[in-house]
Image (tube, rainbow, N blue to C red; front, side, top):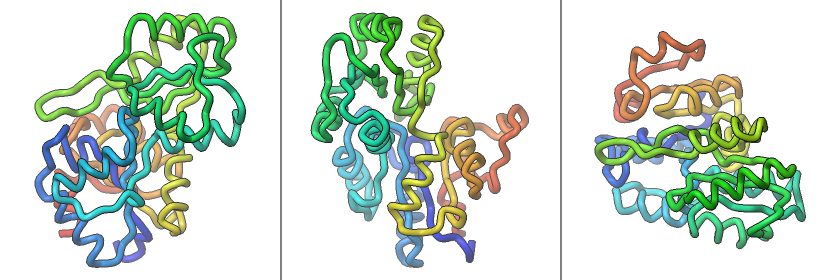
Length: 254
C-alpha cells in the first residue's frame, strides 16, 4: 500500500447498503484522511444527484465533502457535452436526474430526440420504455449511465438500469454506449479529480462486472469486498482477477 496514490471507492454494497452503513466503513475513510491518502467515491447510482449522496454519507458518519463524490451522471453529462454538444435528449430517469442534466445545459425533449438516455429510473413506466423503444428504432443514439443489474438495499436488492438496457438493446438491435463503470473513463475522471497518477490508484468495490472490470481495463489494482453483491465463489466464473479480496473495507488498512 506504500505506493498507492489514491483510492476509488464504490458506495452501494461497499460502504453502505441502502441507508445502513457497513461496519467499519467510516473508520476506513478516517484512516485514509489521517494518512493523507486521496479518495473519491465512485458510484454508478444515477437515481439522485451528488448533494443527495453527500448528505447520505454525512448522516452515516463519513467525514467527506462533495468533492469526494463522482457519479455516473456527472461522467455522462461530460461525455454528452463533449461528444454530442447541442443534441436533444429523451431522459429515462428520476426527477432529480432530469433536473441535473438540465442544469448542465442539456436540452431534453419528449419526442424525436437525438439521444435516448437511460439512468437508474425508480419512476420508470411503460410509457417511458415504449417512447425510448420507438425513438431508438427511429435512429436515436442510446446512452446508458451504467450497466448495473441490481442496487443493494438494507435487506435485499432493487432492479437497476441493466435489465432495462438489455430489454431495449434486444428489441431495437442496438448496442448502448455505457458511460459509468466499467468504462475506464470513470477511473480517468476520478484520478484527475484527485490530481494523482491513474496507475497508482486502487479501485475498491463489491461488483466484479463493473468495479473490478473497470480496474482491470484501466490497468490499476483492485480490492473486491464481499460485503455486497459479489461472493467468493463468483471469482471462479470470471477471468477478472482482483488484486485483493477482503470481507469489507474495514480490513483493508488493518
